[in-house]
Length: 145
Image (cartoon, rainbow, N blue to C red; front, side):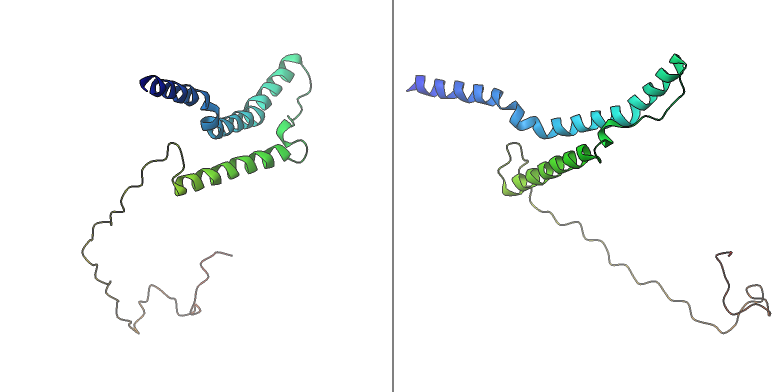
């Protein structure tokens, strides 16, 4: 009986080590997309300009590789990452996620003293002489156009 338990524990440990890709594919896709975008939008354009300068050629603009084909790469990666994030959220809400945090009890925020409403200033018919010139219209254009 104890041998069977040891075998089961060994199988679980091996299985735990084997499924790292299943657990880490979402972050790996995000990191891969970030690296590809950084290389294609930042590093390669700078390197392209430096290379053309060193070679003495006329400098031309870098054409991002990921935008070729109407940016299908970005659309596909957006779909993959968006669906992966949605799926992960559903796993956490359902409680089936492998490393989801335990739900914490909802604690209401501390109650503060009620605030009093601000006092309204009384309307006066008196208009200070500095505000309006007698020739000014009743409203002013403050947009300066």
